Image (cartoon, rainbow, N blue to C red; front, side, top):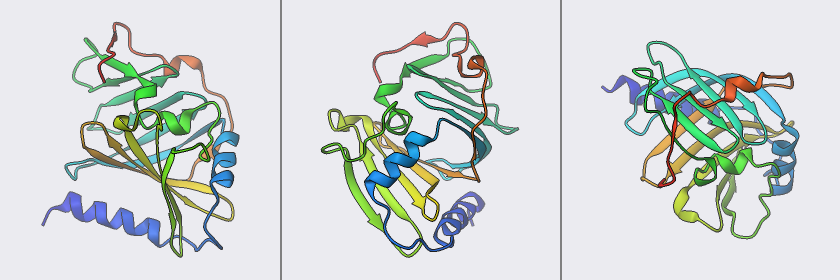
Length: 201
């Protein structure tokens, strides 16, 4: 039995076991929720495309900034500084590649003004007894991939997202309870020194 995959399945079941929302959340309500979230922090569990699982802490500062600190033994660090996303694999801080944030699906929820009602941005909007799922993409560049956002209601809360990138991989991030508000030093969102800016992703 693949333990990682079994745990991953259990985490998805946690989402479906959350308290029921009264009705499907509107795109307007979800956009308002995201726009009202200026800063937030919390724990996350990441289910990778190969079924492996990582955990860590996330720091969000909208617009454009996010930091993923992974727990040991994983020493990965992912940082978005408003314009670029850099990934440090923990083995070396040298030759870190950074890619334009706008070319990643994560840019959709980190935008200064989230408008899920924009034409052709949302390609899926469904609900079940427990949650509302929105699938969004850059309407001008669907080749950049998509993001599936899972919300519960009463009040609206972001619980999970799934990124389908332009390489065909799928990464799920399950969020713990987010603590909203507070301030973060700008340097925690700085790219590592020597990061090489790439434009080909």
